[in-house]
Length: 389
Image: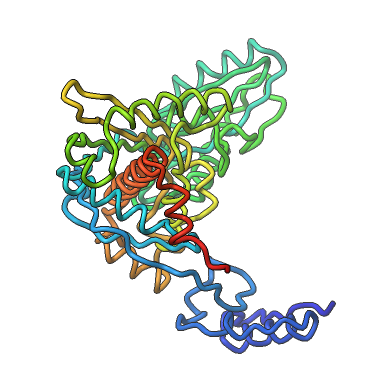
């Protein structure tokens, strides 16, 4: 096959995109008419993609209105969701109606940190232990070195984890309105170079990453200690409203919750909910988030309590929600528009976005659980989710 053309001086143009599609069409026979139709300026894309060749379009709709009672997100929001799965927006909108009529979803961001976890390998465990004491004693200097590389990142603390003669340092940064993975990698690297220059006794090997930060994959350490934003969304649903909107009861939902908890436990699942990933992925695509972060962000916990009067308390906790309102794909034209719909584009908005995401996830969990309990799950997919005879 022919090599795809590149222009070392100016590769982000419509002409270069057209040239690359022409090669692919000539070599494969596939027509690329739709991928070649787009409104954005390719000059906007350096830093987002290499070898730009066109656009893959996703259907997008608005769920809601979603009523949020948060510390950062307050009021009603139309929530943009990009998906090809029928019933998804209808289901989330139904959950949003239920929670809106119940007074809204209460949301709280309870922690915020992005990590890089370098490893230091020593000649023996005693040197590794003593290094840990040295890190604690010299934290202020390590933090100063790290923060020389960033205007918005701050080193909050360093957690230490040891095994044998190895010691992982989990650098925890706040990153402003950026997701921050690249920011913390650069800052941690700079701090570690300062540390290595101190001639650490017994050091045999160093690596900036050795899989403990578990970037773009789930881990128990992230669930326990947070990666990105740790967010809780909660609501108490009146019994009468559950009957009217969802055709079910708090008793039925609570019973199903116990069965779902046991099923998740037996399966070894990282989430005892139904489908966190559905809402998070649809929002991420629409709003220019790094979609691979769904691997961490979709892990979570669901909790339900049946009140004596039949009302139902329900909450979701997302311990590793990685979102941004600045940088990455957030500034691209359609993605920026979707963020602006929710008032979530730009500086000072990331916690607001995190609260909206968590509230959306809660609504989706309630809607799907209710559909299962009331035996509407299959019929709703038959009605809205089939596009084949």
